[in-house]
Length: 310
Image 1 (cartoon, helix red, strand yellow):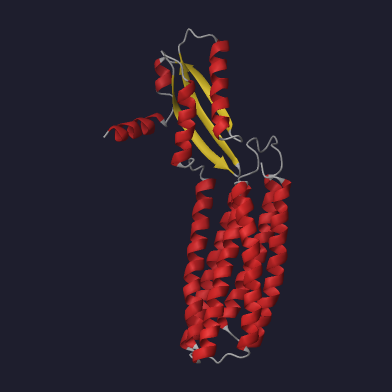
Image 2 (spheres, rainbow, N blue to C red):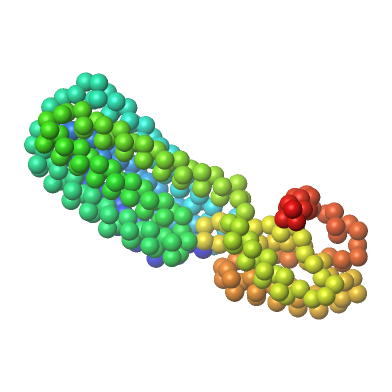
């Protein structure tokens, strides 16, 4: 479950977005650079995205209730998806403005001051982005990681913009400003697409990564006794929590108490690998024919095993 302490990095991100937006808007006003204008637009997107992230973290931290029995963590995927869409929109807008100014270039003014303002904004975003990425990865929060990655795109955009303005300053080739803006628009579009893809996977209950599924299977198999097996393993992640459920097939003569003990040992083994995992085990008699055809996932697993044998 998302911790309330995760809101503080987001609050810092909001403050940074407000500060850098002011710096970049001032730089654009002084210079007339389309690159600096695109950089300012990106900071405006940062501000909207950070506020959205703060709201989603608050909502995700709420406990389970009768209407949301699996918790509220999936709001994080919606938030990161929205942020990805905002990044895509910013990238398209920047590309359009850059293309326009590439065709109809105009002279830039006060480039030394504009570069200084943009450089300070980039340093602020770099510090905040690294903090968000570090905390987001440590707590497996896709919201913080998405916001950090978004800020890093802003950092690279600022670097490219500063480079473009500096080259215009040296060479007086006005189109270089627009060319740099176009290059960074491509980078921004790729980042936005990746965030939307990850959010889509989360909302569609995408299975855990292969390495994590292997760890889950290993934990289960080490606890199985003779005459036992399992199938219909399902995994997914919502926010920081992983969900694991499967069917445990045991000898029909085994007592409920013994079967429950085996299930408990399996749960403990899985939680050693994934402490926040929520595990559901459905116990069935291994001799019962219906136990081998009670899930649409069984043909998928069988096909995967046959593929492994090839």
